[in-house]
Length: 276
Ligand SMILES: C[S@@+](CC[C@H](N)C(=O)[O-])C[C@H]1O[C@@H](n2cnc3c(N)ncnc32)[C@H](O)[C@@H]1O
Image 1: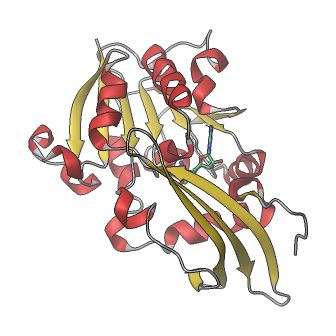
Image 2 (image 1 turned 180 degrees about the vertical axis):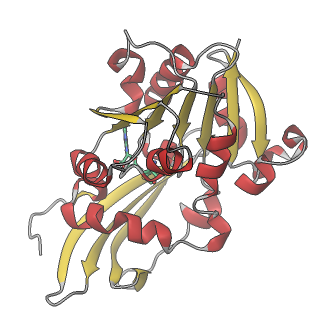
């Protein structure tokens, strides 16, 4: 167990990152795990394509796409702020595919600078609510500036998701409560703090101990901080940088069908943008 005063950011912790894929696989059905890959697959143009997975983590979506199209020469770039998560991704890179992968360590709010000289992308993915990790207005602005700079005009698409705030980010967790995250993986809440921003967003900081039961139980004390984002603010931040809203839906299934711009804005969790 760690004994230092400040817990490490969860994604920088070797144990947490090792358990990440198992935890995602065990998420409730309502979160439609895996459907993000299906939706992303429908947004790709024919033939070869350049893809950027922002906050790619262990490569769940990037590699899901590669497995979906094993014979297509996709160039898939994975960017993440955590070296641990990028290591998990490298370990899991699918071997038999026509896709090429590259890995970048960096902060998504600096996207435009990190990829200043890169050609634009046919598909940019920012899923699993990773946008909630950006806590400052300036960071969100930096992210959208970069995204607008990097989406291929007209045919390019940006797939972005947020989490339904009340259900997930603001769910109150009782100190000392232990919850099962996946078979053999538990989380024990140590401390949770919630603050309100001037625009009404909530910032929730949670410290917890993640444990993996094996022959010898191992545990790490970690934390994360998430900021809610209202759907209308997300859409406004994107359109302020020239991105055009193409689809908006309350889930991946509905994003794959019908005229999704008709859904009530407040329920939106899945957004697809293009740029002129
Ligand atoms: C919920 S995981 C999502 C991983 C992956 N996209 C998926 O769908 O499974 C969030 C990821 O965001 C990354 N992350 C957090 N803040 C970041 C930042 N400022 N820039 C880049 N990546 C960040 C974390 O390291 C983590 O891998």
